[in-house]
Image (cartoon, rainbow, N blue to C red; front, side):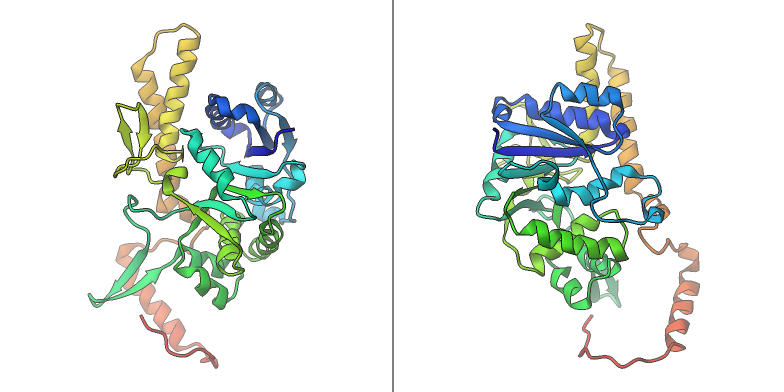
Length: 353
């Protein structure tokens, strides 16, 4: 019986990425000692048949926490936001669990080993969305040229997900934990606390990102132990990456130029182009560079489209986009609303911008 397991989830639309994730794992000889399990959120029978020859188990994902249909809107792949908090339930009898999002690619087995090592002694093993190579880790809104209001992803998400002001402040300025790749032992206390926080987030907020804020609160507010790994273990920065021709691999942009372990985003576009190349080579067909470029650019455009502010607002992730020409009117209405609203008693002291 294998002690460690790598788990991912996908629907039919993400099958190609999931399939390549599995292949990127299995190309390492060390993977023979690690189980690979898949959670099915809408894969076709044909796709499951392909995967069944490569992985140890495939099980249907469920809504482990009740979520109303008006939030789901038929998007069964959103089960990944919920079911990853219940991995030992789906695949029992393993000692260590490593989750990897389906749109990732394993570039180095060292990162896999580090995740499994980091979760020992009941710790969460995870990387953050902050690194020396990432251009921006905080957003700020400037006033009068010298005052700034820090915009915190953790704070905003905690408040919109129904958590208290106290908890939102506890997580506000802490490095955002990227739950796209993480490892936990089966007996870690995090599972139960994470599930509890996830129930709160799903009740008051959106499904998308609920597992992220729930785990950030589990670590930063409930104070459960964590082992924060280097960014190269889960590289998310689109531009800050370098190809080392001598080692023939992707590395960090700065010294010591450590090999990237797991990556996503723009790297997914490169991955799909490589997938197409291997498919053509396996069939003995001529490699058409124009076709490879087309695959790369189409995938990259899809990612960039979903990173757009317009895409985010179309998904109701924010309160809307203001036309610059209407800024004064919107601000005026907001100020008027606040001036005419009732003044309630408060218990806090002085806010400083």
